[in-house]
Length: 251
View 1 (cartoon, rainbow, N blue to C red):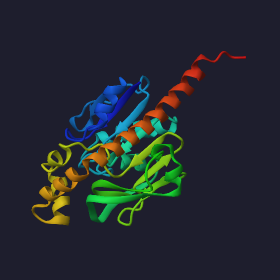
View 2 (view 1 turned 180 degrees about the horizontal axis):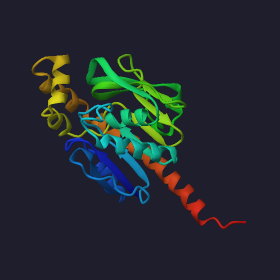
View 3 (view 1 turned 135 degrees about the vertical axis):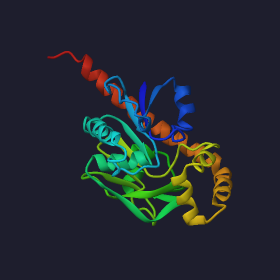
View 4 (view 1 turned 90 degrees about the vertical axis):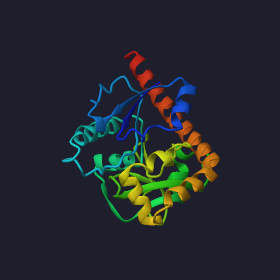
């Protein structure tokens, strides 16, 4: 299996997913778009994962590479290929497919609970997942209108679109599931993230959040592995369909 990863900040990487992919023998290639790295030929890849970043989806003038990234996401998802977007990657999925993303009146930062919708409970991405669970949130923008035909998979009172699905194979989640022990300390040095955090907590919020996350880290890691395994199964099923289609002998 080959996975292409879009990154938008050095600290916004696949996190704990790296260990899961290594254990499965998955080859993954990262493109650091904020460093002007070019998007490669998409054809050899089985899945596309898109992670977070301090920018916003509408900042194409400041970040012109967003235009090519959105087009790549649009083409990928419209072809029915497996996609997983986290935080900014979730917002990019919605924006690229015709949804709307906007600033929130108040950022959502910290440990917050999210609940599955009925569609989420039935989605392959959340198979075996509890109906409600804690998450790490760190975002000041949110999907406000989902793309046509998208399913809203999870929600909470602060952000009603916490996860969505487009077609059979494309998923976005607003919260962070990929975190490790280093995640919160690394993100705290990014100006945009620190400012969003301190708007909620005031000075000293970084230490509080680190403690909250450390307490729940075993739960977060188990959630990450469950979601990764579920997405991996989606990718394997899609690979099997593609293989069968490519080897079928015309009748």
